[in-house]
Length: 488
Image (tube, rainbow, N blue to C red; front, side, top):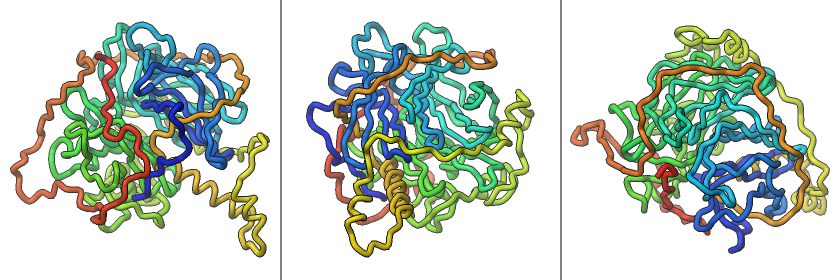
């Protein structure tokens, strides 16, 4: 597995947080940290933190615009093609907002941060229902891309009682029109869950977008050790792991991250909590880093899902267990291009059939430069062109994103912020659904076994992992820390 680097600049005055968002800017070589809860102290700042990849330092960009508060455990995604970070829902609490009083409260807002001009906008969600602990992924559909949200919890009655958000209810946000849409999914629908992770990939012709889901915390029990795929535009849920039993695997986890790498060939799942045993994970030598073979291309993978990370493997192939459901081949050509009962809104089919194109972004004139360029210029006879060096730096930035865990640092730097603009959706969306069961958030862990442990002939171990012992990271923050549930 790739090594985990947690030894970058940090001093004792800089707090660590959990449940925040880390957005990447691969043009200006920055990471942006928004939101999150403070570990062992009350919130001491509301500032947006930015990590300067070139100079290994953190800058304080100041607080968001007035009316935009620090949130935690919402759904986040970064659209690097547009230089934008998005955050939907999440909790406001005394662990995330300075001077907050009262109980934690979920939100219904969609927040957008534009990296190029450092501006904030508060956008409307799909409705007024407060949500948290779901996921949001980006796909290059429609004219300027779309965000896909599902899962987590919702406060349907606006009274602080969090109930499951149905996993078959899929929200789609069209970026260019600022409109929300909804579509019901079918197939093998995952159990209610929260604090899981997901990553999106697509076929070469974009005839299908496949969102891979892993793990998560349930509502009672220890959670899930499984993998599902939500395939669009057919809106079919497909279970891919484990297939040798009913239910979930034997290593449930939650609060992890999913990181698609190498042009969609693989997805690294990093960190998280393993409730069955807080002191260890399923294989300590890899320090909580696992790899999903998204296209079933690695010969020795485990149950067509888990594998060693293969640095030289690039590109996504639609696996056979997906094409069996949606048609087509590994390169695309899906034949099932609409839900089994048709689209609720005809516009959804049009948006998903449109391929987004993005203009090249321009690097900010902020006085910074790539130190690698300066060093390369001093070397005589260097065979690397300017473009090649930039390509190497971009690749390094992407790898850094996939493997850095808990880098919550800052150095003070004043930036002027504009007032937020609240933008309602062009077409309000209201959908009435039957209420899910009233299940409150709970910390109780009573692991139900949905398979017979005495079955013979089943290899429950993920034996694809390396046998040599891997050295521990040089610094690990709160390893094995179990995040407390907010509703208690």
